[in-house]
Amino acid sequence: MASPIIAPFPAGRLRRLRRTSALRDMVSEVNLTAANLIWPIFVTEIAGGEGPIPSMPGVDRLTLDGARRAAERAMELGIPAICIFPHSDPDLKDESCERAWDPENIGNRAIRAIKETAPDLAVMTDIALDPYNINGHDGFVVDGKILNDETVEALVKMALAQAEAGADILGPSDMMDGRIGALRGALEQAGHKDVAILSYAAKFASGFYGPFRDAVGASGRLVGDKKTYQINPANRGEAIRCVARDLAEGADMVMVKPGMPYLDICRAVKDQFGAPTFAYQVSGEYAMLEGAIRNGWLSRDVVIESLLSFRRAGCDGVLSYFAPQVAEALAG
Ligand SMILES: NCc1[nH]cc(CCC(=O)O)c1CC(=O)O
Image 1 (cartoon, rainbow, N blue to C red):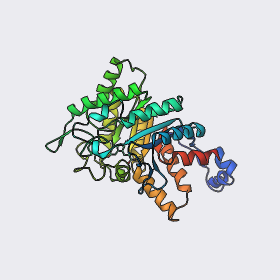
Image 2 (cartoon, rainbow, N blue to C red; image 1 turned 60 degrees about the vertical axis):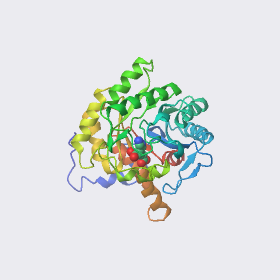
Image 3 (cartoon, helix red, strand yellow; image 1 turned 45 degrees about the vertical axis):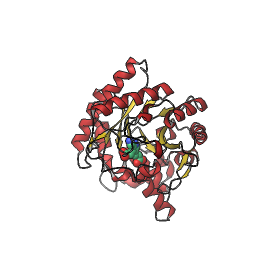
Image 4 (spheres, rainbow, N blue to C red; image 1 turned 90 degrees about the vertical axis):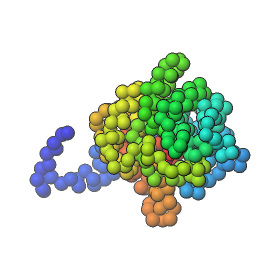
């Protein structure tokens, strides 16, 4: 850390460089551009399942055609990546979760549709069993326990199907132990050597995922909670160990999730490992800000302020439902 020297007042007046917007821009320490954003979208396989998500005002579930249009919009706005989340048919959810690795599941169809429409856009996926699991968990559940190793085997099949469909970036969000090594090994063997892994490395057991679970239709289903696999919000050291472990197993990029309540983790991860570091400004954070803005309680300026906080905390980029609205604002 540099140790700046500040002349004693009145020689030193820090307000001099805050006087005009040109001066402020000159000394801005971080910036935010569309290139820093990853846009998460929800794609439904249910006829009539598209449309607004009540707990995420301004965010819609999309049809496959809607996903194609989102991809075109991302390209126009300079957003480099879209992340796909499936809204799957509840009647087809079961304990075997076999649809998770079906090449024709809605997630894989969306990958192919987007790559067809916008080949230069990076497509990111989510790897976890929850969209297809009858009980809403990210792993197999037997006698109330989440099985680790059996789940990892299923995640490998899911990952290979996504890579086969053309995904550029795989996002394991399940928090099972050993999954990054297993995925990386399987991708190498199957010839998908250049598929990147952005590990949800420091994913906390958070109440801020609530609106997301509404969006994908998992809220009613979740039996119990995810505390036996996601990190205790009290634990910073454990989060750092998870990131170290995932990088050592072959993750190309790492993520901290949720975002705003965990900026200390973002900074620590960036300082300690220097790897490409992302934060996920999750559904509950979106709902808080957008809800307050729509009620007139906050000004829309807080959106960019919130995203700048991630850049200041050392993040290279942010997954945010605000991505299209912010990219539009930045394009001015
Ligand atoms: N694998 C599940 C998954 N992937 C992304 C999110 C949350 C994203 C958000 O809240 O915006 C979740 C929810 C969970 O862990 O229960």
